[in-house]
Every structure is written in C-alpha cells, then in structure tokens.
Length: 385
Image (cartoon, rainbow, N blue to C red):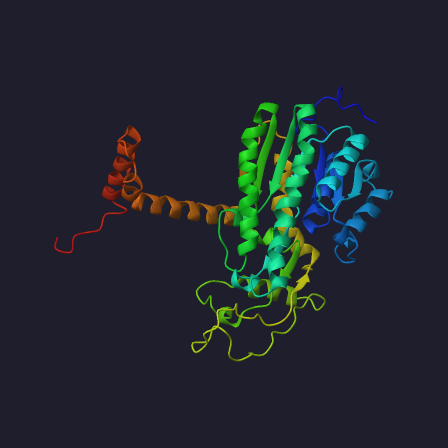
C-alpha cells in the first residue's frame, strides 16, 4: 500500500489520481484514455445497472482490453486503472474511496460526472405513481449519488490537505429548459451545493470547480428516460425547439435505439373544455429509456472540448470556480446573465422600495439605473423632435 502521508502532492503536470463517479459514458471512456496516456492514475466507479448493460459497458470493456494489450503506448496502463462497482449509496462510496486509497495511496481529483436525463414536462411527471417516481430517480442519479461521493472523499482530502472536486454539470445549471424540468432542477441543486461547499472546504486547501458544457454533452452520453407525453403538450412549443422531439430524432437515427411510435389520440381528456375533472391528464404510452448510440466520429466531436477542459483544469493550483465549455455554451450563459441584469435594473426601484434605511448602496443603485436610462443604447427618440 502506498503511504499517502509521505507521498508528495501531485501537481498539474505530474501524475494525478482521479476518481470518476461514473466511468461508463462515452465521455468518461475518452477522458480515461487521455488520463492514462498522460501518466495519471484512474479509479473508475461502475454503476452496477450500467456495467451489466451490454451496450452501455461495451466501450469500457474495450478500453480494459486495450489496457491489457501490448500495443505501443499502452505500457503500464493496466497498473494505473482500477474499476470498482459502486451504485452511489453512502456505504458503497465509502468503500470505493477506501479501496482507491489502498491501491494508489491518495486521491487528487474527484470528478462527479454521473448523469441521467428524465425527459418530461412538470405535468407529465405527475400523472401516476410511476411517473412521480421518476422525479426521485433524477435526483438520486444527478444529485444524491454525487453528494455521497463528495461526503465520502472529503475526509481523505482534509487528511492530505489538498484535493480538487470537479462537478461536471451542464448549461441547464443556468438555463431552464422546457421538457427537462427535473434535469434542470437537479443540476441547479447540485451546483448550489458545490458553490456553498467551496467556501466550507477552502481552509483545507480543497478546490471546487463546476464545469458546464452544452446540455447535449450530458443528455447524449447518458441514459435518457421518457415519461408518457400529455396530448396538450404536443406541438405546444412552436416558437422553440422541442427537446423531446430533438432527442427522439437522435435516437431514431439508429434502428436499435428507435423510440416507440406515439399512440393515436385518445380523445376527450380531463383537460378538454367540457371536463370538470381535476385529475392529471393521462399521458400516452409507457415509460421507456434509451442510451443514445452515435457514430464514433460524431461522439468524438461532441465530447472532445469537454475532455480537453477537464484534463486542463484538473489539479490546477488555482482552478476556476466555474468554467463554461465552448463558444455556444458561453454565449447562451452570457445572454441569460444579461437578461437577468436588465430585468433587475428595470425593477430596481421596486427592489429598493423595501429598504427601511437609506444607504450608499441604495444611492449607487439608483445612480446606475439613471445612467442606464440615459445611455444612447436605451434612449428612445421623441417622436415630436
């Protein structure tokens, strides 16, 4: 067993020990390959329900075969990777951390990367007990399991007086998305947890970074679960892309992942004008799930930016607290923040009206609004002039 008390802390350019909370996604497999070629050590946690899924575990099994091969450039790979079955409950997380430290002596980077996506509107998740249980499923996978890993790892990080928690989320942590209400809620919740955690663990030299790629990075590399659709929401988003339709189109591009055909209109429902029923409108069809299967070249193009960002940030002495991956994601977040700022300034008088005492900050806020109202970009020309 390596002695973590005497082993020097890893630097960004020296071998680092990573623990991935879910290592079977196409993104995780590509990341592991990059880490091993860099000389890093990898603890790959394998959710049992995924490793036993033939398609889901295929790429990881190929990677393990590659590690055991005599191919040039793969020397020593099999000695620097450890797979551990872990379902994300607290006891299994503690066991995984203990085994990781026993094998490699320390953990430098905890990458929280498990993600599943429940595709449904808020109403579609309330039609029956089965759809209601999907809400819990979403939070178990994307929130509670990741929190358990963090709680299990913190004692080791404090003992080392160093460590880096990376939370791989998505732009849904900034942008609400129709049809992904619970996915967005779990993402916002986990990011809020990590923001608070960063302040709590800073005295122990533990860093926390939230990495936000585009929504597609997580949704197209993890399990997609669809709740039955309520007829009222079919075609309801004429002015914006429909997430359910977009994801269905991707799945339908491969015959092995094609989604079930939508059921015929079931006629009158509790939402029809003449109905007095207060019961939730029934959905059409059954709950089903799929793992997207994209062409390898398409998957490479989809995740390469995120893989590069993770390898570049992991283990930095002063990493960013939040990193947006890619131009499209950065622009989307900037637009959202601009909208929030503009709305806040538009209603600053209402916000300040609740203040009991005048203060310098109050005057500063009023002055900022006046300057914005007078700026050429916001001034409206007088029609009479």
